[in-house]
Length: 79
Image 1 (tube, rainbow, N blue to C red):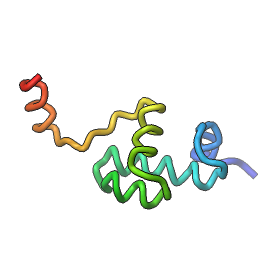
Image 2 (cartoon, rainbow, N blue to C red):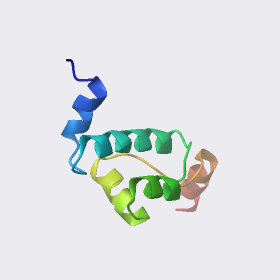
Image 3 (cartoon, one colour):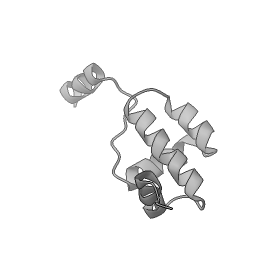
Image 4 (cartoon, rainbow, N blue to C red):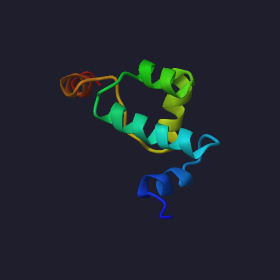
């Protein structure tokens, strides 16, 4: 029986104890990056608080922002 590529990646994640939770986390990362779900919803699905999820994303160098592209450009001008 061959292990799926996703499961292989999930096994390398430093967070969570089960492979299933790690696979869910990979899906959550994708949904966040694609702006399909909010940080609040992602936290609910993973059963962790917003700050914990943001910390995990930061530790994995996943760039996630609440801001839209035009908001990011405005932030750059203000700084």
